Length: 234
Image (cartoon, rainbow, N blue to C red; front, side):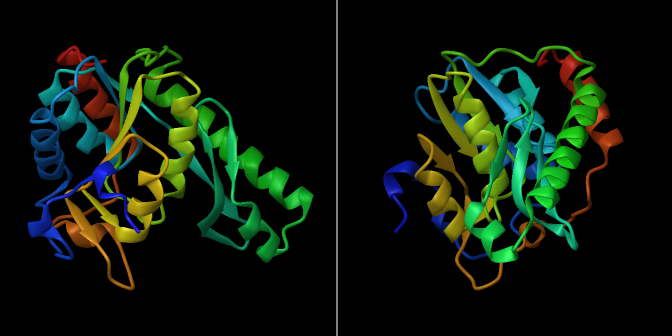
């Protein structure tokens, strides 16, 4: 059962599709909710690339908070790269789904190779997006983790673990849309989840919450980060 004391949603949006025009619109509406809350001070917005960056930029803009990259890469199942059995985070840690690994019958060699591939991808994207620069520190501050949606929540879980290691005062997960299962799961791991559009159907796709949807490219992320620097949000 979802802990409603740890979740903020818009009940008018429950189980609805196509509630946001695009990620920018979703970010602005998410920001409006966050900015109306008490105690959102000294925040740092950590956006998960790629889809979380246009959302996170709008949140950072409204809250006048610095924006940093929370690069997370799923650890791919060798024969099904669209699916994963864990994730690697920007600080190099690997969060693995041990029960799924056992069910898949993955060998130690296969696991190590998949983790190494994910870790290399994270390192390359960190260099591409940050140029090796340290992001704004989050120790003792409110860390707001942003993505464009929560499907299973496993990528977000990895981001939460890496963020917690940096000793923030509290962690808030802010996403425009999420499955009820994922929101319930993540709500048990952080101080608060802000998710206007929660859906409890048997199937869930993040894209269904948006009227206009496309895969955000690395070039788009870099362009958005230039905007953030121009607004002094980096």
